[in-house]
Image (cartoon, helix red, strand yellow):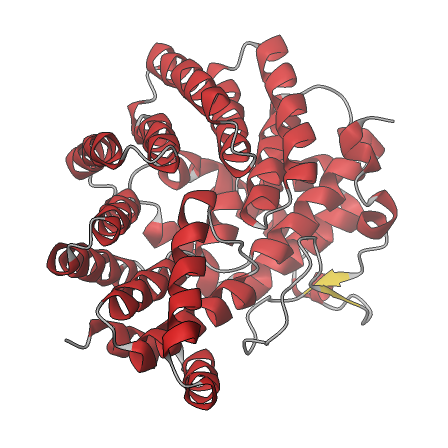
Amino acid sequence: MTPIKAIRLAGALSLLSITSCRHAPTAEAKSPTATPISNEPLRTEALVDQAAADAMLANLEKSEATLRGPAPEPVFERLEKDHQRLNAVLAWFKVHDHPKGLRAASLLPSYWTMSGHIPEGRAWVETFLAFPENEGTSIPRAKTLVALGYLAFRQGDTAAAKPALDEALAEANALGDKVTAADALVGLGRVALREENLDRVYQVAQQAKKLYTEAGDRNQLPLPTHLMAEATRMRGRYPEAAKLYRESLQLATEQGNRKVIAVENSNLAAVAIHDRNWEEANRFNRESLRVCWEIKNSYLLPYEFMLAGEIAAGRGNYSRAAKLLGAADSLFKSTGAAIDPADKNGFDAALADTKKNHDPKKFDADWAEGSALPVEKAVALALEK
């Protein structure tokens, strides 16, 4: 049995239906697995037939370049509006056509992540990878293995992410697919960050950059640069990390990639926080939050609340810090995302500082208030001067 076939095979095959993972934030952390599975009988399949399912798959495949490009947000928005129908299509493929389900699942990891559906996406990916018809080496399988590695990493589940990405890399290399091989290497670089194997990060980032360049996929070049920046920051070499973040930001600006623009502004805010340059940190944080809100990126928003909370803690405004850190923690949990490795220490340090210097009863009240804030109000709070 291959490593991927062994991953929760029984759970994946017993999947009855998938529901949206959007729900009110809970106080308890989520297990890093494909958990949002309903025990109710499958009803969504009735919403579509073969023609409708095939039409959505065709539209997804036509949109692949956009989904991988610098401006996927219009496709994300369309899929979000059609979220129930998308799940109905995947449910139809689960019953009637497993290879087509695999093809569809291979195209959706960025949508699931950036729209706040990480556990749901992982459940679908694992479901289609587990079917016997989908076990043979193929480009859709290699891409779906990359998707599994990516989603599992986002949940903090490196034990599942690494074998999926290793297998994806082997299959992509066997098929001569340089782009998918580079995607797998980027995923392995993310895993190496969480494992603090920073030498490995530089190694795979350089390999991925070479493959993207050879394949002519310039849209992905900010990714290996970003990985090297994260590793450099985790080594404590902040000026070098800032230089790499700016390099990635410049590439993203040239491409019009607003997601990466938001990400690198956020990371430059983190560098400024480390340097205790609160004005610069606030400027980068506000710019990142502005872009995140414009592109409706559910995955990135909690990082903006987190950084605004870190700035507040650094400035000694512990009531504001507790509310913003609580809002960040709540949104991380509701989207099923684990904090990225380069950012975890900053969150933990700000939280510890806030607990140490804030009255315990007031901290609990402020944390609860922040955790319960609707996203719109959390954004407004983070933008307050």
